[in-house]
Length: 148
Image (tube, rainbow, N blue to C red):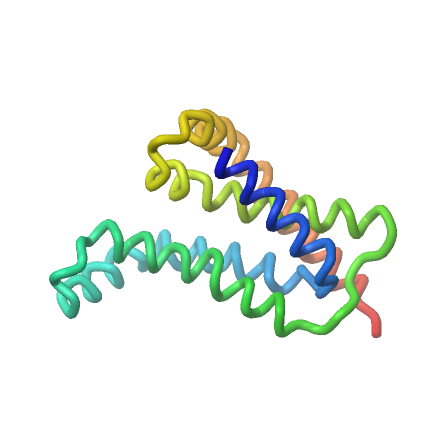
């Protein structure tokens, strides 16, 4: 249920705020790549500095910063506009599905009382590669179709 609520909230944000999603999409994918390449080392380094904080919480914080916080900051700082009409609905839905798919495992890990979240997370992880690929294509389309 928490994952569904997250998906709905993100869709409403992306649909009504109406900024360009292309750069934020690519920042999200870049954040995922950076986390996969350097996240463990950076988390270990932060754990040495803040040894009283458990390592899994530091890893989750780094992951959320790279996947959610920095791309959302870029999204809210981007110019207004983006796709139009029915493409706007599809773009908002795709961006919210992509972000939710990347965060679903983390949500399911910390919201253990929600059995539905675990089931949704396992389903989403099975289609995550396809969602990321479609998100990359949509990001490039948004960037190429950008006009002021």
